[in-house]
Structures are given as C-alpha cells and as structure tokens.
Image (cartoon, rainbow, N blue to C red; front, side, top):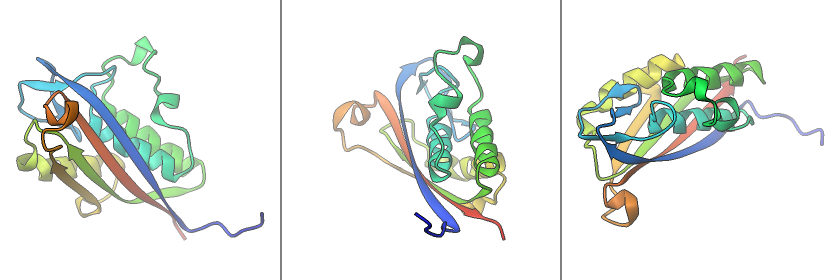
Length: 166
C-alpha cells in the first residue's frame, strides 16, 4: 500500500521477574532498599526492560531478547540502562524515531516504591534523554491474587510514544 506513514507511533512493553531474597532491587535504574529483588540474567530491572520493549515496539523493531538474549553469558549482570540506550539508538537509526514520552505501571505487593518515584522518573528520563516530565511512573498491587499478589514476582507494563522530528 502507498499509505502515508504517521508522524508518531505507540508501543507497549511488558516484563515480569520473580522476586528472590538477597538479590539487589534495581527499578528504573534506582536501587530500592528491599530484602528481595528481581531475579534475571541481567540486573533484572523489570522497569527498564518494559520501557525498552515499548520503545522497540513503537519503532516496529524486535524485542529486547533479540538484541540481548538471556543465553549470552557475556551479558550476565548487564546494567539494563544499556538495554534502553540500545533501544533508543535502534529506534533513531531505523526510521528516525525519537521518544516523546513513556508511562510505566509497576504491579506488585513489594517492594514499596512510591517514595522512589521521583528518582526513578529522573533516572529513566536521563537514560532515554528526555525530561522527567515526559516519564510517568505509577504502582499498584495485584490484590493478593496469583504469584504477583503473593509477593513472589514483580511485573511492569510500559507504553511509549515515538515521533519523527521535522
């Protein structure tokens, strides 16, 4: 089809990690005091993983597993900020897409994050290269239902708008 290309797009990202004792809890690039943290191949920053997938999806690209497979021993413990920076760079290189904003919702019983929202917003914004006012972060519980509601996992949904600069 010869349909005109839109000047903006949206993408949705989702990630979930189990919570384990003794693991650092890094969310949105911020270390959160907690007796549990997300477990995963990288630093398991579930916020940044969802944000990266939202950016990549908005640009019509593959998910983070394509760029950073969890089977690659060379990236074990990787700082997830690198994943988001790669997503931003790929979006710009493959279509000239720039991030307009991201909105994030954390879903879990623990850790409690509301005292850290401003720090997370500033961190996510700095990693992407946008203003903190272009980042929304909220938290909710799963009302005691399933492994998330039982405090055994933390999930994140993120949405991102990308646009083409004139």
